Structures are given as structure tokens and as C-alpha cells.
Length: 377
Image (cartoon, rainbow, N blue to C red; front, side):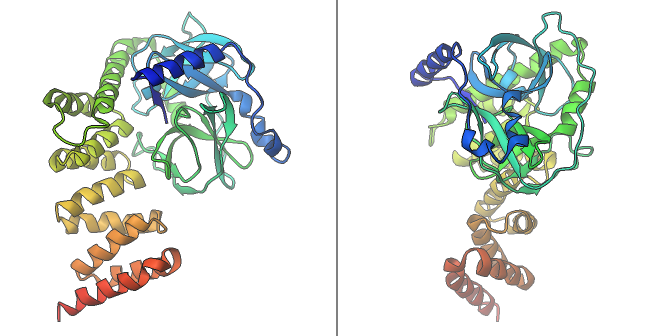
């Protein structure tokens, strides 16, 4: 979750943010902290981060080291950090060659490499995001949520934890903790409903793979990330007839960004512009990187639906019905796929879920299924 500085309003906002960097953070969520001290103790472990392009968050993992997202760092050689007590320092990214959307920052100009790994704890209860809040200009603990899926990071090193815990733009790189205050992971991205978290185990893998010898390739990939994000921003408000050069840039830079989030966004952008073949290419890659990502799965399912490739759509919907059975869009797609393909087991499953999560739409769904199966008689 990031804020990209592209237009004059955002630029003015950046100036305001920079000015506020000289003021102290006010304690956020003081009222809630009375009963959540183990979580509120982590407020001072989150920092605000300012780059030439965006405002984001970071999480302190040791005295001189902060972890944030790779897409926050891009190819910038230094960043400005604001600590919870109002102190401001410069931080420097340390290069690595691990594919997760993470980067370690050091406050030490000598760029010493971290050696201590993070402790891994079993997730207990609900999870919460702690990030730098743009509205409050301070750290904030957001509403808790459930864990939707936990990835096989050994097989899929770009995969994420998926949750409905809340967050806002600017929280990228913030800490995600469980009910005991244990660090679960680092917030990466989201669509407002389902957020994506990079597990803490992958922070350890990045630490292991951090080495100054990777500097040239690290910043080369960072440039691809930056130029991908720039061109996606240019395309954001275009509904049709996007400039061909921007299309080519998105196709090239996003594909080579090695960043699951940007690959997702590129696929969604091409889908919105009606280029279903390119949308399919990017979204299929995204699903191979993170097979349990609800955001990627539903985007690809919609592309297959529009292309009328329902046989490819069916397994995606079946997986989504397990991951997010309450999602009304998934349920609607499920009804249509089950009816058109005459899949009785799938239709029974979808209607049962609708009776629990979307009762208002159930009568129309039943009628559609009945008509679909009757037409086969």
C-alpha cells in the first residue's frame, strides 16, 4: 500500500509531510492500547519512509536495520526515515538477490550487512497492521482481520499471506502482528478488501541473501520497478486508446520487475483497457507466483469469463469459493459457471454458500440454475 507522488496535489501533500517530519508523532490508538499493550508496544517499531516518489512505512528489525517493500525502495540510493519519537535519519538500501518484495535499509553509511535472523512464532488469533497513517501523520493500529491463506514460501518465494485485516495507502512496509504482538510479516499490498502480507520467514531469507556484490542487478531491477509504476500511474485514468509507448513500457518494465504486485496491476490494467491477451499473460504469471492469492485469482477468473473460457475459469472459482466464500462477485461467477457448464456439484456448493452469505441474491441464483439445467433436458 503506497502513495505515489505524481501530480501537484500529491506534491503539495509531500511538502506538508516533509514539514511534519520535524514534529513528533502523537500517540495513536491510546484508548485501544489500554487492553492491547502487547500490540501497542509495537507502535514504536514502525517508521514513516519518504522517497522521491512516495510515502510509505517501514518496520525496525534491529538497532540499525529497517525492513520495507522492494517496491518502496525502487532504485533510490537513500531514503528519509521518521521514527516514532520524531527523530529523522537517512537510510540506505542494502542489495540482495532474493525475489520477495522486501528490502533491508541500514542507518549505517558503511552499509554493514545484518546477520541476526528474526524469531519465528506461531500465529495466534487475529492479525493487525501497524503502519504510518497519512491522515493522522502518525503510526496507527488498524482493525484486525482473519488469515485467509498462508503460503508455501519454500515453493513460492513471491507468495503472500492473505487477510481481510484493514490498512490504508501509505502502509506498505508496515508491521503485521498477531494477538500476542508477534511479528507475522510485512504489509505489501491490497485492494481495500483483501490485503497481502510477506511472511516474516521471507525477511530472514532476504537477510541471508543480502550482499553488496548484488548492487548492480539490485538497482537494475529497482529501475524496472520504478518505470513500471510510473507507466501504470500514467494509465490509471485512461479508459481506452492508451498511448502505445505506455503500453509497451508496461509490458516490458512490469514483466521484468520481478514484482508480483506490479505484475498483478499490469494484468488488471490491460484487462480494463480490453487487451485480454496481455491481461491473461500477466495474471496467469501472477497466479503461478502465488496460487492462493484471491486478488490474482478473481482478476484472472474475470478475464477467462469475458473470453468465455469457462473450463479454465472453473478451477479458479472453486478455489475462491474455499478462500473467500462470502465474496458476492465470486458467488455470482460461480452460479454462472456452474449453470453454463451444467456442473451439479458446483451449483449445489454455490447455492449453499449463497444461503449463508448472500441470501438476497439466492432466489435469482436458484432460478438461473434451474433454467440452465432445464435447457439440457
